[in-house]
Length: 183
Image (cartoon, rainbow, N blue to C red; front, side, top):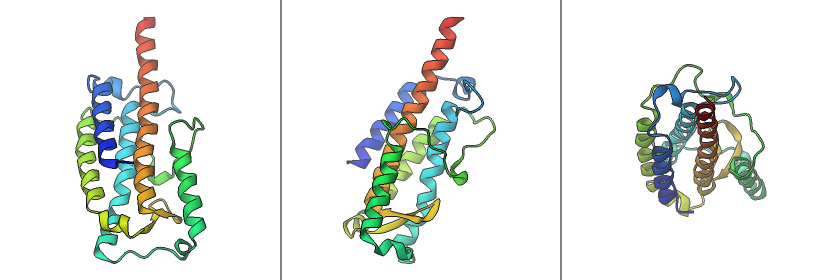
């Protein structure tokens, strides 16, 4: 997967689909259990940022993977399992870790600009991790130290997760449009 190209495409698509919406539309929820478009976007920023300290410690040489990272088939299995779970085609709802929950409050209307800025930083982080990808570095999920996978798989997970939330946010937009056309 070309992560940089995929992130550029995702950023463009998010801006294209949701850039015309105001703060009220971005925060609209069809029901209390469903995240708004803005919450989906904020969630991506929150999740992705939790990987940055891991990447920093890798680059500084201070990262220590848990013992389970030495068991190759476990690393492969967990990576494949997480990647499958975040796939947009997997329609099963997944409860996120509490650390990655979006805020309850109204999210500011500049969330797309925040997202675009974040995407630029994410791309820089990926580009500066090349040597660790080549070495087959293994990291833990920022949400659970015993969920280990290759750094390369982590970037696949991040991009695929963004695709999943683009789909979810698009479904909210469709419901919002349907509501507007019913009036």
